[in-house]
Image 1 (cartoon, rainbow, N blue to C red):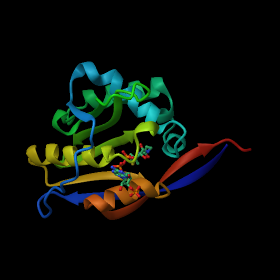
Image 2: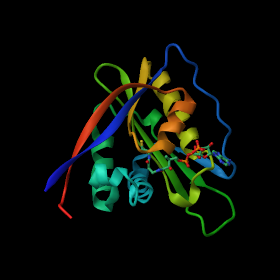
Image 3: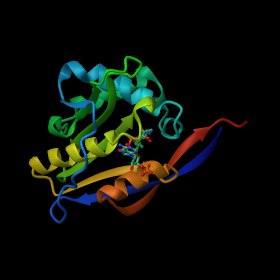
Length: 186
Ligand SMILES: CC(C)(COP(=O)(O)OP(=O)(O)OC[C@H]1O[C@@H](n2cnc3c(N)ncnc32)[C@H](O)[C@@H]1OP(=O)(O)O)[C@@H](O)C(=O)NCCC(=O)NCCS
């Protein structure tokens, strides 16, 4: 085995200084607030969003249905879990080939009152419709309603699409960190 280091950006949104951006509501979607009954669907959407993507190499559990279910259970059972910052986008249009559960986001409050965004993911067939932006904005509103001072997330630097999304919404790069990943020799 050898170790590869992935560069990750910590990005933050100052909830005291910036107003929450407004983004267009995507057509043909509704946004479902957290409900315990949705836990497995969040896990499934997480897996469908991350498998075959870079982050499933950086965090192998994201590419695996069982790993995503365990992760989702772990997130929902944390003391800082914030239902108000946890959302699911559901498709209500009339194309039967498109999945109902389409995009997920989860939010946690850390001990120092920072809102931590977990695993934003949109399934491949529903991308570029504004779902991730709409979910991040809902999570920010949930953090704000919980009285948190800033929101934080980490993104793999090579994931330019996600970095662009967060920058567009007002997140700023505050730190660079490296995640070590064990890789088999080829
Ligand atoms: C990154 C990710 C979450 C983005 O999800 P998404 O729902 O496609 O994001 P959005 O639609 O809000 O924005 C993405 C792009 O669509 C564009 N877009 C939004 N609404 C649109 C519309 N109605 N028509 C056309 N384009 C649109 C946005 O401008 C944006 O363009 P850009 O990539 O050139 O900046 C998604 O690609 C994904 O799940 N990737 C794998 C998992 C992952 O890496 N998650 C991030 C972990 S930090």
